[in-house]
Amino acid sequence: MVLKIVIDKLTKFSDAQILGTWPTSEQYDRIIKEDADVYYDGELAITFRKNVCSSTLPADKGGSLTADNFDYWSWASRSLATDQRGHAAGRDIFTNPEIRLTLGQCEFFQLATKGKITDLESALEIVNKDARPSRTTYFINKAESDGLVDLEALAEVNAIVRRKAKFTVQEVADATIVRNTIKLGWFDKWLRTVWAVAPDKTAAAIAGKKRYVTSQPRANRCLSNVLGTIDRSGRVPWGRLTKSTENKYEEFESNKPFYNEINALVAQYHPEKHAILNERFASVKDEKYNLFGTAFTTITVNNNFAVAYHRDGNNAENAVAAIAVMEKGGYAGGEFIFPELRLGFDIREGDVLIGDNQGFIHGMIPFKMETHDAENVMFVFYQRDGIIRLDDQECEMCRKDFMTHSAKNFKQYGTGEPKWAGSFPGMWVSAEWKDFKKEAGLDRCSETNYWGT
View 1 (cartoon, rainbow, N blue to C red):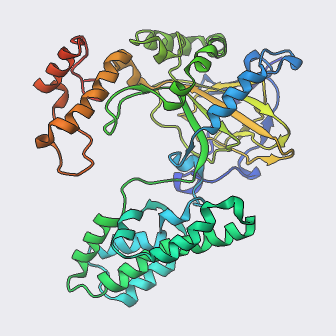
View 2 (cartoon, rainbow, N blue to C red):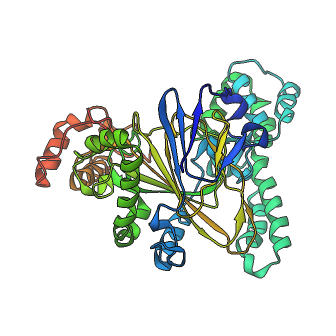
View 3 (cartoon, rainbow, N blue to C red):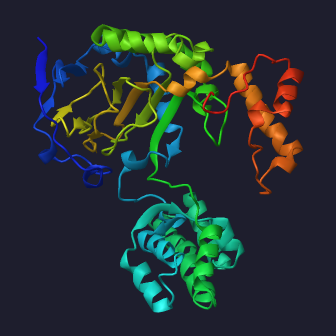
């Protein structure tokens, strides 16, 4: 018996109200723990099935999951601690405060660079208004090299922080607080000794922001990794298998039965969507790009990471995602919540949830670990349209090699920065690229930019 749920109207939330927060009981009416189909706007939106995925169910429970397979996925999910998960990692920042500007400091730069703050008293009032850490980080090495950090004091406490085995947990924790305070003292010293005494404080603020404030936001760190293929980007204009995929490629490839099973479940429960996606991704130029013949290109795998409310981005157009879980030990929580539908799903080992993760806000109830070895390994299978436009892996690696070659040999095209990576306008239709790929015996490689055009 499959529970049928028809949603006539979504509960609306503003992004500012909900993104980056974790679910509360007021945001859902029920947690589904049985087979269910959810319809919205006349179409099947979400399918939930219990105990249908043999690959995530241990043998003693009727599945095919082995200890070796679990160990591989446990390793894969823990091998990257990333700070690039945005709202999914939570709105309030609580990891690595020592690398961040506070919200008050961010507001100072926003106003001071426009000439709206011109005296130290007003600056301190803005800075001290909000001491919470932000996603904005600063260039630590520049602050230290400019004499804004007490390096002797920093070295003293780092000796404790970095040699953890020789000190108690409390000693390391206390030293970490002192270390963070020393590092973060750079801003106050710069504010008082550079900005406050500058004849042109607007220019000083602009120069300070340019030198010390990074443009790369960093969210909370979490154990969340990507397996499979990543498409080109402006900073990395070649497609590639992720580092973790390459590091244990044999184990990754040996899990074909898992990928095929998820693919078959999507074909069974969402046949029309699957047919569209399968046709779209059947044309990729390397079998690794679509998980060896499935309708998916990429897997996000999380370890004990209950995501906060967020919207998925960069996935394929009109696509569906499939979510599955492997487990160890005992835990509570982890239910997957769609607040706009006012529904949650208790996804456990052997279960699969298939639906439109891009169209709906979603998040998870935080875990409560009940045993010391408790582990939730969650998989999200999805597609990235950019992968359709990739050349085969040999050509994509040729593009990578050309970037290195360019950085060494074509500095006249560069930005002048010491760490210029080799990218220059029109490089993929340039004579230099054509000569390089010809010399490599790879004339077939395309002359497309990172968008694939």
